[in-house]
Image 1 (cartoon, one colour):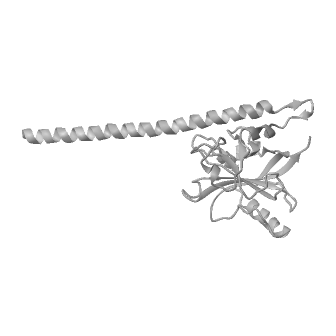
Image 2: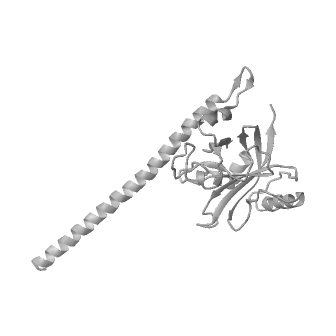
Image 3: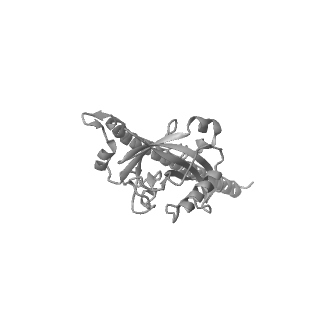
Length: 251
């Protein structure tokens, strides 16, 4: 090998080394940015969880209403969702569309994790037949990242209910259907022209469940749907869906 060829080879090796180091540092930066986002979001959610749970209790006038105090943080907070043995213990927000809180936290700051939010078509007073709640499936399990646990029969058998609260009432939600689907299946209907149409909708989504349940449903029942993106059925159009029957907790 001549001196010129040796210099050219060394030069190419240096270029490759510099590019490799650059790629490594860029990847490290991206990973660090993602981890920082997770940590920041978890810390922020912990702050509002502390506020919510510290306000939950009783006063001289009776049970306190911590959601009323949430208006001081953000008037768009209209409910709270809790699922035992998951990270799901979050405020529910609602805007005038289904885009605003897709990538904003409850402080209205830009956030990849977004918020847990109610469909803008729903009445936050919980008097609709069908209430829909959305959230991202985050890789660290936050937001709706652990909804997929309900596809495990053992987990489902021990966690077939969850808690849902609005400013107007508290509800126990009994899960009657869980499945992976795509956007081609319309499970997001909020209005029904007749009782028969609603009854048929309940039958359809019940039959989709990947885990059989014996929850009885009728046209008077109110249901709530938890929906998140998922690659279980399709990498782009996939969704994971949990449907539950709402029963108001008295007292």
